[in-house]
Image 1 (spheres, helix red, strand yellow):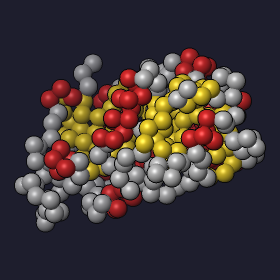
Image 2: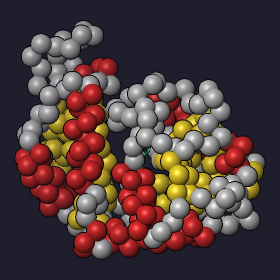
Image 3: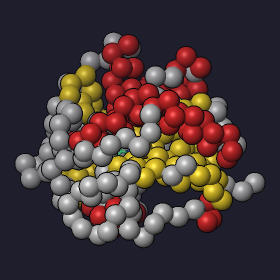
Length: 287
Ligand code: PMP
């Protein structure tokens, strides 16, 4: 079955789908994106993803190229045409095509690209064994709350992790605090047994999975605190884990050379992972 991509109003064979060489996304990374998981043919938490997309556009003063309703029609059509039951949908919007010049063009229309991809179910061993994390300096800009397609520091960080045989890299800011992973939010269970994740500010992306986990924790009566923690605190935490739309909830068992807890996925982590998997699969689980 051939894959289909959506590019500015057209459904095209994925192999031949392309944007103009002077698209500002291509020239300047002047654009934003979202990745939405699809489970059992339904989007997971699509409304908050679309709200975050709107916010990212607003922060960059890019006029939304289509209405929310029209966007949802194309999203559904992408799942249908690509026959996706379990996978991901990628949405990218840029400031559009214009002669290369730094200021905003006077009259460009924003570009929209969508791709969809089937994904095999996550390897359960990741959840059972946990993953290794390394630490790296956070060298990103000061607006990490915007989901910009400009991801060079994240890519370099992820590559450093993979080169070290690790799954993710936690970024450490100038004050020594963990901000987030290169494509995931960071969590620990601290010495008091409290679930902790950095607060929403301009140093991190407000993860949709992060929000969902906080809701699930609240529902389950699990005590949590949105606060910063240092690398040292994380390394001596009872538990650690990462979250994102594609990695879901994954236990972290080492950070650099420090073993977290007893080296096995923690109790809270496993509980929250189970709740998140149940949420994803539940028909009433759409936000
Ligand atoms: N932080 C960063 C830097 C990311 O790229 C992502 C993935 N989009 C996340 C956190 C997790 O966000 P979400 O739960 O919305 O996928």
